[in-house]
Length: 282
Image (cartoon, rainbow, N blue to C red; front, side, top):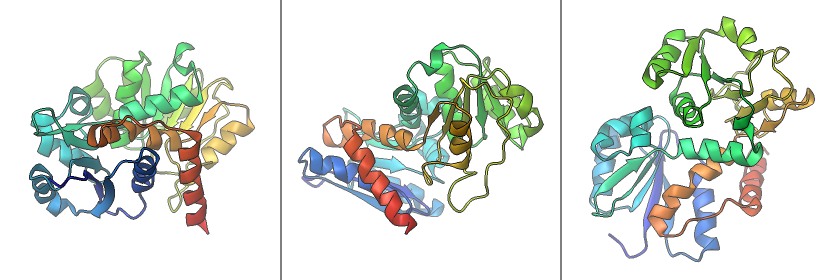
């Protein structure tokens, strides 16, 4: 292993990720001699890449789409309880014995973002309506359950939502899109965990009329930062939380493991990422 710790983010594609921007900002801010790089890895090359990490090429790193579930299967013996609960890994790091360990920080990042953007969101009662049934939705549903919030999973393919609800057990229910209006009525939280509304993706078409105006609306999409969902919710008076904070907060535990410093999510970091997002739009 080299003297200066090296960390990574892998995925395919990988050019869109802002993770290097975040971690390099912290490396500069804390004066740490280390590096963080984006590496495009195809699914067929995932196992070989993990062996490189085991051999000491990196101290650890992040895992993004489409590798989170496959990485859990590769690392199941070394995955923590959170990763095991959702069947997905987004962070690798060195355990105390020098072996390679895995965790899922998306859950902590999601909750930290909501806590910062809408303090007390989990104290008002009422259920959460969660749109989507992919890996992100699975982690978010688990996160909400840790706060005692019941979750209504809504997805066009109901069977996928049912699979998540079955895994989570009591407190989670699965529904098709046709049930959305009735579920919104009385909900205290609405979360979009799909890619709909993201730049380059189809729009998320949803009528917010049944949603109480005190309900918090969160979109995990952060490009654009103000999605059509958040704009519509803000216009009718709902508290809104954008998706950028989740990206920032989920990065904290990994950096702490790799570089030995627990970084802070600051307004300065948020400005750095926002400036980069704005530049990418030009």
